Image 1 (tube, rainbow, N blue to C red):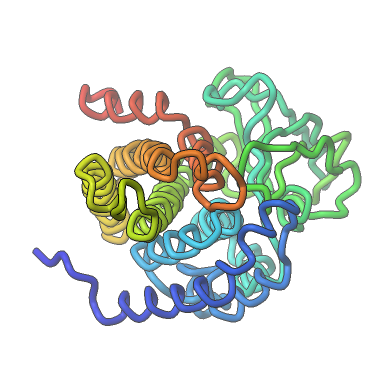
Image 2: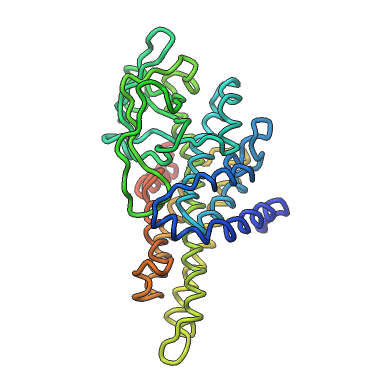
Length: 381
């Protein structure tokens, strides 16, 4: 059993860490304050092969594995969490379902531009009445000649403002709940598709979140992704991989909280000595480091199981649950170590705390992850 990264994975880690530290980290605070999505950085990530990490080279991607993907997301999130969210959606929620369920024509049409960062993607599943209960979605698609006509509203769509390739889920059958749902590929500019309300969020400000409105939106028949009425399977398989990405994002945020806290604790003096010498501070740092390492092992194992071609639903949920709650806990400890300075925007840990919270919510709340894990244990899946 090997616990060290191999040479290839270490190269990925060092390359992305160098880029994130030199190029992204100096911009992180300004991106957060301005809420600016940075297209120039996405293009650079595309040139590095990181907007299509596990897309095969034949379709313009990096041709790497899921462990590489987890490494990439963690390193980006350590510098700036919003860009990690953009990258996670691009890789796991847009490229993956097209790669796994798309026709050859769809793969050749969409993957090269997505994998090279020339076009941005988004994932349209959640609705006002269908969040954790995704099977309750109401967006409807009906066949009309050689087109599909979609009507409905999607909410909380990451990358939605800038996205040019949208994975959309709609009800095509009469059966209730998860049956009768199909997946579609929509494009910016399709008639009847528009951006609705743009959300103003607690954190990850440099990524957009919005409504996508479908009002008699017409798509060609060949935009159906996978089989008709089997879209819920597409959605759940996609989220299994996506949760590995969110776990990695959470690890990056937690690591930022730890590393910033260690540096601050060595510099900040109280009672004539650095606060790093106080046991209360040391215990916080030790617990942060231990939880982060445990979360990383869970995340890498989930990625490894996926790379073996095995079902990884439970492993992904465990990784996402533990890593996200670790990120929120570690960020809270970091603010406490900084004291009053941790509560002001001159220091990074208040941003880490705001960014961490979303990892406990999107792509399945912590409560949903516990339900998934419990069902696996009880043999209900």
